[in-house]
Image (cartoon, rainbow, N blue to C red; front, side):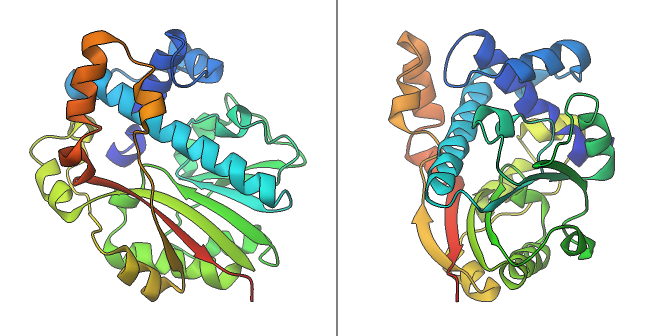
Amino acid sequence: MDGVNKTLYIPLYGKSYVSRNNIIIMDKKAEEIWETSGFPLNGKAKSRWLVYFMAMRAKVYDEWIKSKLANNADAVVLHIGCGLDSRVERVSAKNTNWYDIDFAEVIAERKKYYDESEFYHMLSADMRESEWKHQIAGNQDAVVILEGVSMYFAPDELTDLLLSLTRHFTSVSLLMDCYTERAAKLSKYKNPINEVGVNTVYGYDKPYELADQSGLLFLGEHSLTPMKYVNELHGLEKIIFRYLYAGNIAASMYKMYEFKKEQL
């Protein structure tokens, strides 16, 4: 795998770690996959602070999808950049039309651990290109997440992706996390993804402009580290984590934006 694809092992390790310790996310699938095929990680990529952050981020996405499907059970879900994540199982979306989407070599690896069904599909696609549209019907509402992937899209690529989603689907609810521009510039000096060979990332500071260019409505920001999840940590770990990842400095470096396209 190339560097970007290898980054999938960082959140996989994180979910397996918290699951084994019975905090934030219960993910037996992540434990199973990590035990059998874990990619060797070193240094910051195995930091427990990063582990807790990614687990909380994943939990926010899980709860958001549950809320969207509770209000629109017929929507199709697109998990873009799915890696080896077991979100479809964690949110119990057995009867939801769900597409886990990633590069071909990632999906090939994923198929060692997951089986497709009438409702669950794994799609090999580069979302910077347009071929994916021919594989998913567009006359439906879509719930879309981009977890840990926006930073690998150049600005024009991300705009094109969002625009393609708004043009293809009847309505779109979308949640994405991203670096700020400052964080993207600093990441080449200190970022766990450097340890799997990734050195070029992008940041986004202007969600309203991104929305306008893509035919979306910007609804607001979400916390990546809600205190109800931070409070699952204990003692000194909770204090250190709040300073490193749940404070104002961290919030100025990493964002989570929600967008929507209303049905016409």
